[in-house]
Length: 382
Image (cartoon, rainbow, N blue to C red; front, side, top):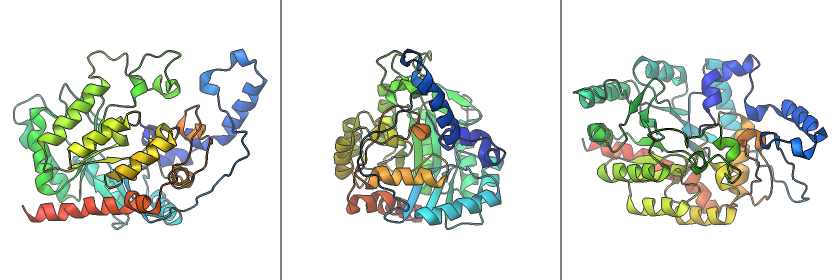
């Protein structure tokens, strides 16, 4: 599940033309809610259920992050120089010092994206993808490495976001069916990333309820049905994808990996913790999994405390100011029982983690600084 998919499809130019993402459609949501309120309770559909908190409890507005942020997971949402300038202004207002653009692109496409953001070299960093062309043909590794090196020469500092939800590694243009990250055909590519000092951001699996039966016991049905994977033939299951991630990270211990979205183990953070403890070359970013973790704030707060050195702030949800501020509210405050159904499309309430200053500082900035600085050390040894 990728909440950025809407913006990737239309771009912010589409927003200017009148197309709005779900979390920007307050008027429409209110209109729908008014109509639903007039319907019989038996006729209300789950997708239309948008409760409002009735509790008289504190509401905290966090307009700017407590510490300057490096956003380790975003995408090329802004398409024009005007939109990119707008993004920078928003970053200034909310306290984001730098944004990593995970383009997933190669060749001419990567060069075009890089040039779009080149006016702000200190505010944006561009990462590329892998070219899977001919993945089932002899010589794939050499060709893919050559494409990677061309991207690096064009300005790429890392690789990502790579995707494998169970059918094989995929890009915007193709799926390398049956070729997962632990496949021997990928070995030379990942090894070269380590030699070049290019970290790899990798998306494995999806939230657990996408794999569960689509019935009245599925906790995340509102999103699960749209992004369902339970009906996909030949797909590697959720746990199997975690095994693939572990084998990949273990095999390439000299390469730094970032498992994005909590490695989609937001429902089983104990397992993620064991993986992090076993593999020192692995980080996890928290992008686009705020709604999945905010219902269990005490447990998640303990996880952040235990693994504070291995977690990275990320968004993956566009560049609207209010989006950033919702993430700050969840991370920084102890607010309880609030809803963001238009932004996250879940029916459940959210709660703040109230993370300490020490943890926030690591999450927002110092862990990313350490990871990014380590690339120079790696490159200098080659």
